[in-house]
Image (cartoon, rainbow, N blue to C red; front, side):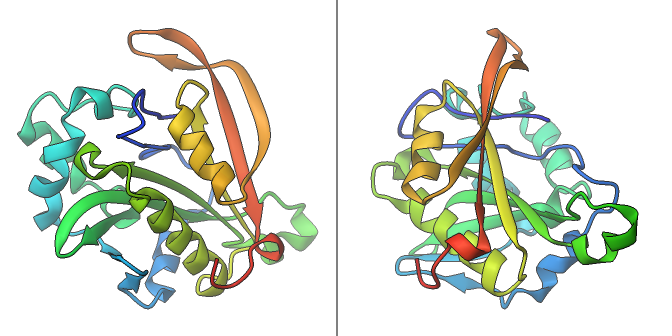
Length: 216
């Protein structure tokens, strides 16, 4: 499992584009959401290739890409990776007053299940992640965006569990998850290999649909 995080409170990230958790990928389930999602201040929609420039402007920043699974040394390298499948299908763009202020990650997948009941576990879980432009930090926008995404996961996609991970040093990310009522379910010791910092601890959070009141 890949983990991502940021060192500064003004730039919040969780896991970016990661590996498949289960054998079956169900990214097409996101088409069941009534896009765009609107919260009090934000509009959330599926990313398109036209979003390369706007997202590159903050993802290239050292305080952001330091904790992402991959760096993008040039715009061309970033643009090529951005439009790859399944990355593009799993990326959502967050807009505030018409300006892109961040992006989200959504991967709907099967839950672990024994063979006899496997059909009941299809598309039962969602992994999420987020990146916020540091210029727009400190205003609660990341918390609002993630809350809106979780809401859509439970009440539109009807998954039963939402989970996310971050490197333990990423205090803003795990505090965001705890503000939203996500539960720390795991602490992996030295499980994440950082390109510069070596082996680091990771935190794993989740929340169940039964724990999430509508309209949170």
